[in-house]
Image 1 (cartoon, rainbow, N blue to C red):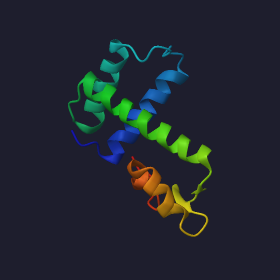
Image 2 (tube, rainbow, N blue to C red):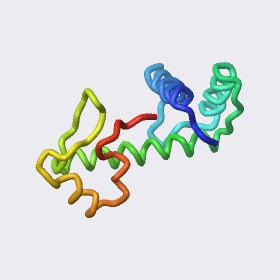
Image 3 (tube, helix red, strand yellow):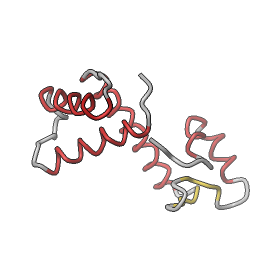
Length: 114
């Protein structure tokens, strides 16, 4: 399944609402809660998603988040809040970083989107 940005944003916002309502998620979200989110997605967009697809989408976002946090903590590249992207502060810093971490190239110079 290809997640459209609007649908991804809806799912993430729905999970935030669950957490704010007091749902305990220390060991991950329970099947019952994920079924509720899947039903909400069906009502919102008319798209059938399984709980496994939701878990995989959350795992994908967790991976993105950990890469972004690592890049921010390295402080090799500069972060732009306005553009939601990393860019090379020093000349050649971006190229050097991409050579060192080739999997991170998608986050350098382009806005990070859903």
